[in-house]
Length: 486
Image (cartoon, helix red, strand yellow):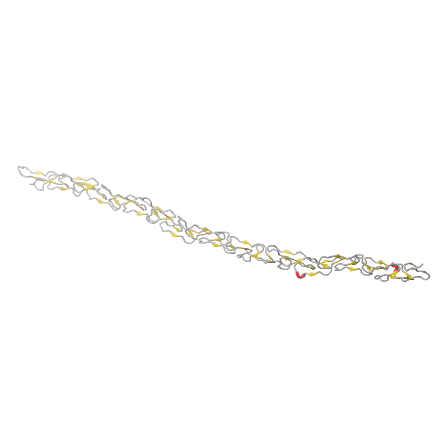
């Protein structure tokens, strides 16, 4: 720790600070940078880690400040490098754990901030890109947003859940609207195609059942309402045509059978009443017109034959009774007028027709023949020709001809009333309305012949006295036959 170089030296010289005296006979040697000596030392001391010995004759070592460390030569303190911490300068710089970082002169490693990744401890944190996130801490890389989440932000610390009706794959920067025709019940799953008979529109989370009354031919289109005369239940892909014989008042209800007397063709919303004049034996077929001689009111399942004694001029009206003097058999469209010269006592039995007997007549359309009135003659049965009997003739009722009043009778009336045989003393030769008084001078022994003249010598006074000629009495003269004797 001392030295002497010889000469008049009475004592050894202490080795000065910053030098070493390895040899006692040689001059002190400077310690050099990175070494130090407090003096009186044989050898210089290596500057310790965490200290610096900047000069070549340092007598002490100077401690490095926190965040610094010694350089390899120990002649200077240097900045603690990025990615390391130098909390204790006497220790070697400590590397930061993965996912943390440290800038120069750091005494601690910093956790990676949220929204960033720290792949290198010596580099500044890197902001997470859109679609990734970081919650901070020991993070070497940003995590992609999970399926069903998204973030459009840079340096995001969390991802936002997709709203109902949307979905996303991993690492999404936005959510995608669920496509029409698909279900997105779980935003983290791929869209599922809708089942047949269901549908969805863009942005809907679930497939909906096609409602009754509508059809869903395509899964990605809104339901189409069924038109009148068709129907569907739920989950239908096509509307069903209402069958013939049924009505479909609602497009969402099952068909209802038409009642008897109505009908419906295919695709009908309602049943139609069978019209008058038609029959509807089947509810599924169009009405069938009644045949001539038949009729039907509304709602008829069959036509009715027109009964005998009635006419059915119209297919749709009730039968009309034949009037007296006409007749009709079954299925008649019109009543037939009884022909002239006949009587038709029954309107329903054509076979009951009878010819008028002589002395009666019918000009047609009569239920009974008309009697020819007394005092008239009816020469034909087919017309109303009534001719009054001439004076001196007569007829009783129902006579086709007038009868001449017989000889010996008088017919004061043409109807035969008061017809009488001529009284005694009277006569008629036929066709007389009154009997003729038997003239004087004549006798009328036969009332139906001409008077007979009295022979000369006899006489007749005529009338009741002319029953016979009276001989002229004896002793008297009878100048003529018309007077008494004188």
